[in-house]
Image (cartoon, rainbow, N blue to C red):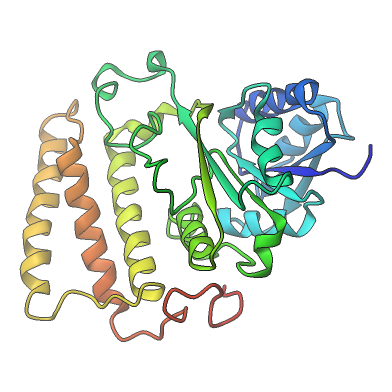
Amino acid sequence: MNRPLATVIVCTRDPGERLRATLTSLVACREACEFPFEVCVIDSASQGGSVAETVSSIGDAELVHCHRIGRPGLSVARNFGLSVAKGEAVLWTDDDVLVPRTWVHDLATPLLEGRGDALVGGWRTPMEMLPRWARASQVHGDHDSTRFNFQEIDSLSGLNMAFHRRVLKAVPQFDPELGAGALGFGEDSLFGWQLKEAGFVIRGLPDLIVEHRFDVSRLNRSALLKRAARMGESSAYIAYHWRHEDPVTPTLAPQVKAALGRQVRRLKHLFRADRSYQLSEKEFGGVVRYADARMAESLRGQPRKYALRGLVRCDAGGA
């Protein structure tokens, strides 16, 4: 195969069978793509050799490559993927996503032709996958991209995003303290904000939609509570270290934490009393705010890890 013009990076850890479907959909993209591309699967310290076996079973070693790293963490895997990618356009999706046949062509071509520096597309989840209560709710944020503002884009979403390799000269890596396996969220959003800060153009492709077939167990109440807490902690990290926002003033912090703490305790009581109880969007937001305030207070006085809205960490890479 000629040198690929685009690289698709899929980071994964203990994916089970869902990875096979993702890779099958990516291999099918070759029929509609006019230029060579590669798929790099980054195995982030999975147990056993199931990822390599799945990649091998696809039967296209020229197109799909597996790289195993010994350290878990989504940002760590993303950064390793950047180090092995050969393409000029770097495309990203998750290990539980199905892409349309034209996805690689449609996402990489604008970058290769100089029509933007980064792109973000849409996503949706088949309604039949969701429990009835979740179909009209956006509490978990995974249904679809309807809340994503494609008109004024300033961030990215790892489900369906891409950027040209040239941006790495200014913003060389994802923050290893963010994302799954670390604080939980925000590594893709921060990377996008840094690109905007560096003057790069992010374009939206809302009609280029991938299908997100996530594990519905993430919708149970304990998973949603953990998700909300991690979202709050990740948000506080970015606010303190990158935006240089100070925590709530000492005189106000106890009041805020007490009020939010009461809400969290109420939720736990409801969960114990009613095993069918699910989080509302309002309650989910309350847990996010509580975790944000608690994390912000714990960061008070610590050295900032970025210059104000900086493009690289002050410690030149971090953990």
